[in-house]
Length: 501
Image (cartoon, rainbow, N blue to C red; front, top):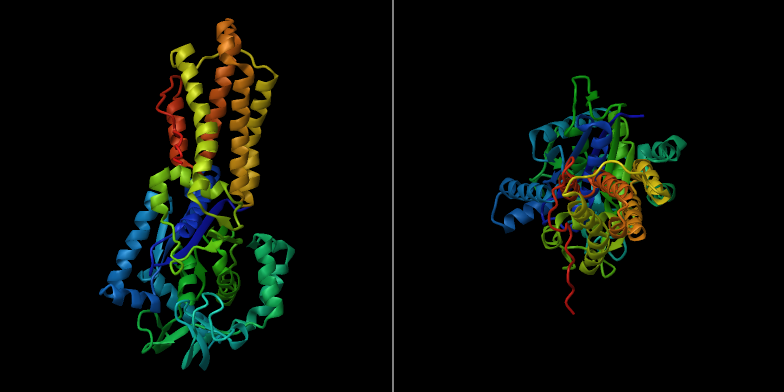
C-alpha cells in the first residue's frame, strides 16, 4: 500500500477566465489532498495544479489584448493563482508551461523519444481545428466540422513530426484490461469508453509539432529549429516536469513518482482520451511507470447544455462563492451529484442545499447545542452522566464514520462521504427532538442531561473533524466554537437565505 499521495488537476488553458468546471476539478482535488494529509501526514501528500500557456489561441488572445504572449500569460496565470487562493485550494505547487523547469523536461522527453525512433518526420495533409488545436483524420469528421466543438475545420498541408501512438496500441489495451489495473481509468464507464475506442479504431500517429512560421509561441523541438512542440505533448509532460527530472542516462527520477506513491490524475471527461491514450503511451515510451488512477468527472450543465464561453452560459465560481459563501459553494458541488456524472447547475440548487442541509441540519444542531450549554452549564461542557440506548446508537455511528469516509473517498464518492456525515447530523438532531432536553432540565434529571449534552458535543466535534477536507472554513469554525472545556458560541453558521417571490 503506497504511503504517499500525488494528485494533479489538468493545467488550464489561459485564453479565457476560469468557470465552475475548472473550480469543480480543483475543489475535488483539494478535498482529496486535504483528506489524505489527515491520513498520511502533510509531508506525504503533494497537490499540483497549473496553467497551459502555449499555442495558437494564446498568441491570438495576446494579440487581441495588445500584449506580448509572455505578458499575457503572466497576467492570466496570476488570475488563476488568485482564484485558487480565494477558493481555499491548498495546492503545494503551481506549474506553468513557460517555466524553464518544464521547458527543459519537455525537450529532454522529446529527445529521448526521438532517439528511440518513436518520433518521425512526415508530410501532413488533412483537417485541423484551430480552436481545439487538434488534427482530425477524415474518418472522424463529418461535413468538415470539428467533432468536438462543431466549428469549421481547415484543410492544411505541411511537414511535421509524428509520435508513434500506433506502435503502442496493443500494449495499452493489454495494460488497461489487466485485472491488476482495474482502477487505472475511472469511473468504470470511462474505462469501457476508452477500451471500446481502442478496440474499434486504429490509432493514428500523433502530430506533435507546428511549423514555426505558422506558430512561433511554443517550445522549440530539440531536433528541428523549424518547429515548435504540439500543445498536448507539451501540456501532459507537466505532471512529471513539476516533480522530477531526467538524468544523463535518460532515466527519470522523482520522489513523487516512485513505487511508494499513489499517483492520481483528475480530469474532465472532455480530455479523457488525451489522458487515457496519449499520456500512458508517452510514459511507456519514456520508460516511466504509469499513474495509479486517471479519473474523468462529468460536466456541470446549464439547462442541460454544456457550460462554455461560446454558449454564453459560463458561471463565475468566485461570484458564487462570494454570494453564498465559499463552503456552501464547495458543499453544493461535491454533494449534489456523484463525482463522475454530469450535473445541472442552478442557484436554486445551491439555495436548497444551503437552507436544508447547512442551515436547518448542521447549523441548527450546532447553535442549539451551544445555546443549551450556555443556558444549563454557563458555557462549560459538563462531565459525568450515563447514556440511554439512543445515545449509544449515536456513539456507534461516531465510531463508524471514519471507516465509512475512508471507503467512500477511496472510490472518489464525495457525495456519499458527505451523506455519511449528514447521517450523523440527522441522527443527532432526531435525538434532540426525542430526548427533549428542556424536559430533563425541568424534571431535574441532571445526570441524563449532562450525558446528553456531552454526546452532542462529541458528535459535533467529529463532524467538524470529518468535514474539514470538504468545508475547511466551516470545520475551523466548529472546532473553535466548541473550544476545549468552555465554548465560544458565535452567530449561526448558516443563516437561512430568504427566497423572494
